[in-house]
Length: 88
Image (tube, rainbow, N blue to C red):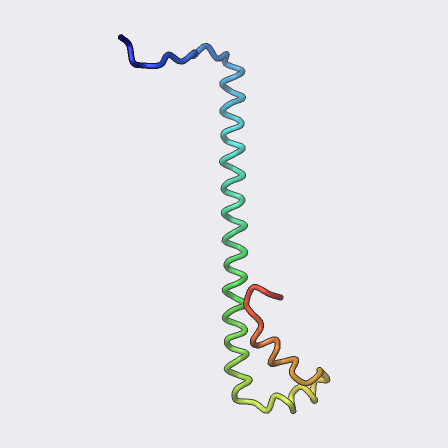
């Protein structure tokens, strides 16, 4: 008794070419998605570092005086400094 399945391998050259093209297109989309994800993660990391630096600077400054000097409502700089890195 033969336990192997038989596959129909009678694809035409044009069908095989089309399948290869579809596979390449899928691989290209996956590569682009990975690049996009890496770009997003890189941007989040930069924001986290910037906000951490801002928090350190704010601890050394008179924040109320700075907010008054630049004309923003009280608490604005603190809100920005403590905002999660994934938010704008």
